[in-house]
Length: 320
Image (cartoon, rainbow, N blue to C red):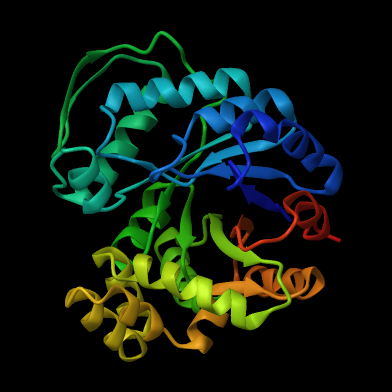
């Protein structure tokens, strides 16, 4: 089984994370996966990890397809793959209108088509030949990569609903799931596996973890995160599809009305307990195993900064 962590770690300067990352393989971790929202970019922490812990697999979860040109995206993955041959997974996704349009001032158009076209372009670019193609959402003229990854990185897609899950099953090497409970996993993997028609597909899931034995503290802090994420249209639609619409209706209404505090307070304790793994480290490991039992092949722990010793948590949460 693969067992990953999200990097960089919150609350610790990036240069000071070297010892933590270097120790991961000996603790039993196999992967580190980055993200790209308002903190570090997706590639720099993985470049550092490639040197600090040369056996770890490095994945992006995810790089938005709208915020880089197609050729630049291929170049970035090829550069990372040159540092860690055979150990890179190219995770891409649509991201959100907030990040693409609001923060980067770029059009957020045709998210499904842009992910599909970027996947197809990356396959062609990783193969090393000249790419001269007119895709539905963008056109590439005369791009011939000077740095060709060998082997080509697998490509996995952030997939929250049926359309993207089916695309991941048909054309990609797997799917990345985010902000769902262990009991929700089978609904997503059923669609993915049906589209894959028996071909093996990786199922990566970011699992939010707080190894804190204080449910009240965790729930109070996590409710703000849940409200902030699950009111984003893509995540709201995802949880509607999962059947959680009634449970989140008050949160969505209050958020839309501008009542951020009320929206967070409306998130139920039981929903937090489903979406955030918390408790003593041994109990957290058991809860992560539930994701694996439900069909996740690569759990990626995302440690929430809720007031515990980070180094001790990384050690205590390591697979047994």
